[in-house]
Length: 155
Image (cartoon, helix red, strand yellow):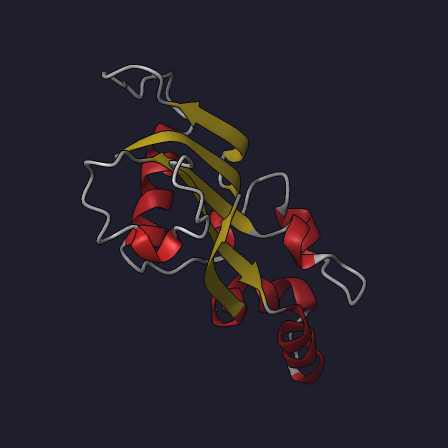
């Protein structure tokens, strides 16, 4: 079993990034401030049950988060990590079996989406009743209370 590809959306410097693992050896190298640490932190936050805050949103989405309204599409702001995993007959699937949804015995691939999204309605409701605090200040300080993590599988 091995990871073919990892895609990231809306996390810190990584607004839309993909890592392809094509060979047996994979190195994560790059200039300072290119997203190497952000990539590893995102994996840790989803796989080790870490929490997210305002500074975890992509730099290009933070203004949209601060200006969130009723007509905002939350999915466009959500932080996402997609793992594409390939497995073989000889692999122990005990940790992966709940994610295998295709009954085709020739299909040997699973896509898992980890998503951190804003509970928009609850956030906007709380902003309305917040006293002496602008929407921007409230979101910067309390958004972590209005985030939820979910895991999805897709083909």
